[in-house]
Length: 342
Picture 1 (tube, rainbow, N blue to C red):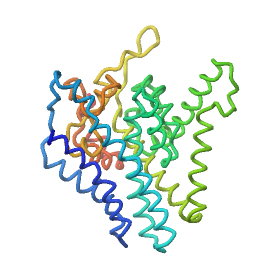
Picture 2 (picture 1 turned 135 degrees about the horizontal axis):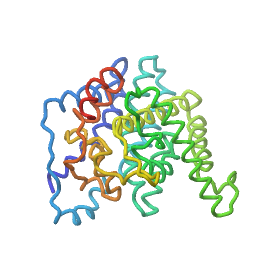
Picture 3 (picture 1 turned 135 degrees about the vertical axis):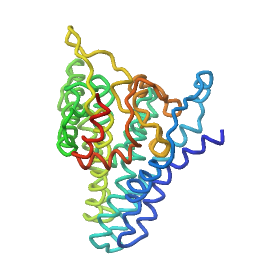
Picture 4 (picture 1 turned 180 degrees about the vertical axis):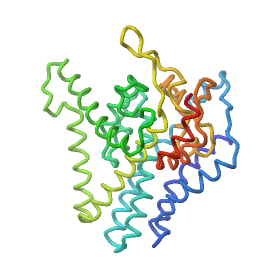
């Protein structure tokens, strides 16, 4: 029980962003330094753990409300920080350094505590959880992810048909363009096909992607109404940072891994070997075990607190935060990761 309190450390990310919004100058980058400097350095020093929850305890652990509450509490945290950041931009007269630092700090929260938690909740069958998932995707202006990830990415992962699966020798920056535009196109197509099968008009309120666009525009206009256009631009930029964090995670999760295409033309079933895994503790805690991504794709209905280390899965050289930094420098990323691809 007490060791499960470690997941409270995930709130250090929004806590650091709140502090950054109080600081001037380079202090505005506090969250950036915490997540992408301090955490990677600590993960180089601290040992990784391959320990799994015992099988006879998985059922009980999966049902404990404590783990779900930790996810739910991110909803007010994410919205509160974006709104507070919008308020600060409108009232504090920040300079360029503060603008950039606050955008990046709040944007990291939108990605780590918003999109990432939405990803976990979006896989659950309950409408309540799916509603929260869509709500957490709204500040990132990326609600179509709910459709594409579940019905597109998980179906075509580690194939050329998946825009979120990077090919060997593909750099991060080109991948950003591919995945951002490709995921929107995929989500639109999936939802349009659904409506056609129901004999409903595609360009109608029944199209979830159109509803998402309207909801996101309302959110942006509301912030502008409350604090002005500068605050709307802040919210939009923070959302973009969150999206780029998500897509950087997508990049390292499946880089250069491909499923074999069978004689039938269909890809082989998804195996743990088709996702990169990381057992480094800090990244696991801060991202609610997202780094045990191999087991997530192998059995996507498993809750984060019981995800397992699987021997078949390829292992990243360090945790997700450190690998995200490496990915920003493609030649360095290629040199380190290619020997592990095989």
